[in-house]
Image (cartoon, rainbow over all chains, first blue to last red; front, top):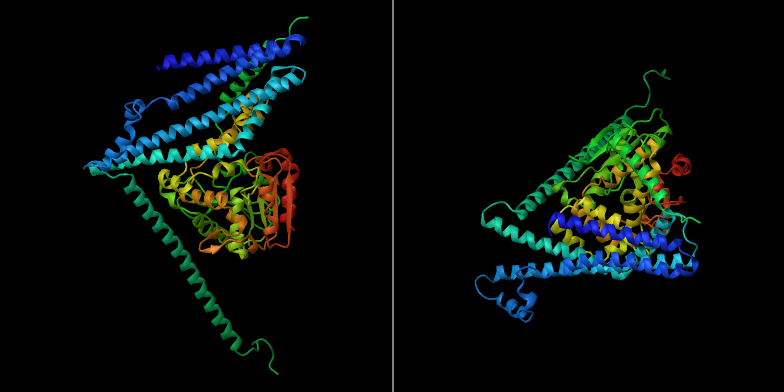
Length: 255
Length: 346
């Protein structure tokens, strides 16, 4: 999709959402006899916009990967995995397959999170619809917005507090880490072939710098403690010497 | 009867928005510094330093502020009118702030042992040496956890301890942040990604309240159109919210794993610098302030502290409002901060 087309698509989505909102406002002003039906229809329009936005996000995550031999021919998968374990280039082939598997897991986790967010946003609209059907119509756009905010947030917080979201978020975070790790390994391998410093080299250097800094910090602290101990010992010796000396002050008259 | 349309309301909102945006464009860039002048008293590394704020009159014991690693501490000194630091100075306390700075790549191996056992312990000692008196510790959020750990490891270095919005039980039922953290492999993430990007962390925090932080906050902006001072405060908050340091990878993973996943501070099984950090070793008087509507540190997470301490003097204040209201709300400056100052002066 080109930039113009993407912009056009965004604009269309925005325009359709604005139209759906307008329809909702109109429904709120309708006569009581027809208001409920008009409201349901308007909320349905907004749900359509929501569905379109989330469907586009999920479709991007579920589209087949380019040059994916497994996309059309699933039966090939196990054979390709077995083949990757044979021959002089099997390590590279296995890494490649691991990278592809990591990408697939990432896309699945992303799609799962999108799905849950979609559900939550839909639930928010459903709650809004229920409030609008129960209560007197809001008197201003601002009041309508506040209702949507309250109900949308309540639905979202229910999702945040659920084990389903914790699982899905964990899967997405871990899949991102795994995928980045695969890219790093491939990049490190290429740089090593060219005898150029790679990430692993940099991290090793950073580790050594950190160890040296820590060592030097703790050594300085230990030296300070040693210095303080010496000073305490010196002061104690001085005190002992003073206590051992005759107590009479030279200013006091002798008996 | 003519149908009431939204056009007039929308037009009014748009006009005020345009004026507010004009105000934003004309406002001077909000700096990442606090409103009060400070001098550097010590440097513990290239980036970590101890800042000293000097009171106009003396009389109070020194206060060492331990801020969280997650954001910048200038929220404690946001403006002249909203400054916790200034309020303490006005009551005669020399104020020290341990500024963690912005970790860079080579800081990825800094652990909680370094932050607490080395930097914070040294800072408490340096303040005591400079002022001739043990400091009060004032820990904020994660910094409150650090302050508690120091008070457990070195009880002799702490006079009195104030914790603001500090989590102790990190597995309470209403803790969404904790729930989201349960299945993340933080060690692998730290090893693979290095320092945790501030953008990623901000995204997580925003994702806890997206309706308020991404929508309502800006829908309300036109209300500030004709209030230059309030708009200035808004811009400083905006700057603060997204001016976040990256997190040193090792310390972040250790904090998330040990506290948020294993809840070791609460269970008394946390170990730092080769020692157990049991809150039953904290003997200093403690004032535990939490926010009643805090979505980051739910009240129950902070309230869990009291029964675990060995301190004979323990008080709690439940302050109405959210996480940040404790330092920046007008009510906090009117009611809460004087109570904290009075408690420190006992």
